[in-house]
Length: 446
Figure 1 (cartoon, rainbow, N blue to C red):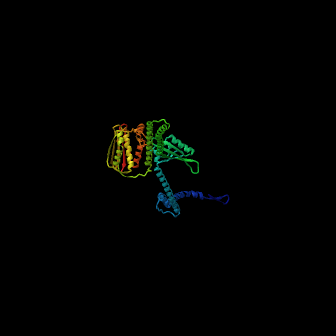
Figure 2 (figure 1 turned 120 degrees about the vertical axis):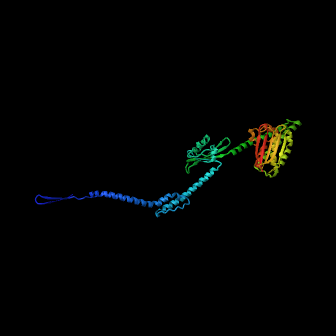
Figure 3 (figure 1 turned 180 degrees about the horizontal axis):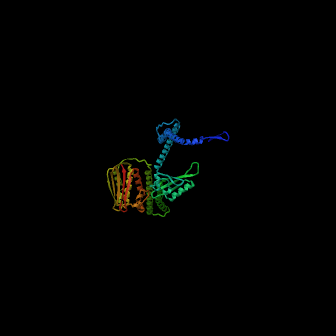
């Protein structure tokens, strides 16, 4: 309120007043209108900004949606964007090319490693420092004896094998950071395990372990055969030499003086000497056949002609054992060395005679079947027990050692037969049982 006072006559005062509006009251009166106006402007701005931002962001959204297509190799996606966003688009495309190159390199390395490990004959197992399996190939599963093992997530080595020796070697290799080797013998095979720690670069920290498994069955079998062969050769050479030296010493010392005894023991020395020579000749022949060090002439030969010669050659021996030889041969031609085939037939038929019964027989059949040349020699002899059947082709192996000594064999005949058959890609099959005879079938591809 504004006030004004005027003194009139006497004691009379005129006092006037007027009401005015303040800024606050004016604002208070305008507030509802301003609020309505604000809401209206807000709505207008909201829709205007939405439309504008949608229009501005449309190229970016399209680029985002098409990012996967842009990253595909050889992509030709073209998007209209603002000039300001072109550097970003170009950078994404450059990074796309680099990422694709890196991914392709990783894929090639992964495929190469998978191809190599998948086709390895050796078992391959990769472990981390916790002994969890990172990778394993098919050979590794087979050799460790768990073909159905499936690698998923983190599986510990204990889920693959519980072999105490293998686990012990793994622990030792990880703990001591040492390369270890361990041989394992299974029912039918020999395996050699190589344990190699994986060291972190430039640090003496074991990150994992590489286990490589090698099948050494052939090497072990060869070592065993060599050991047995050495022992057998020593024994076979020592026996006749000991006999010869003993008789010669008796004659030298004058213990044998009469002519009849000297003649007798000289004959025994001669017999043992000839046996020794025969043994050495068989060894040399077997070695040449096995190692192919001897040049042999091969030509088309008729198995019938060779078998007839062998039957004639062994005829007198068969008569001495009272064994009948029966030959039933067709004209079968094959490319081979006639001396080798002759020796093969000779050894088989000779065994059939020596290990036969009195008044027994040896039946020899030669014929063609399914484009193959077949030689079947069956006898009525003592037969071969089942437990010896797989070993009769080993050098110096004898089923009945006492009988073999009587027959004068060297123990190398069937071994020579086996290697001659293998020389011409032949296969040998034996059917036999004790005291019921033996049938040996040799099949050569023509």
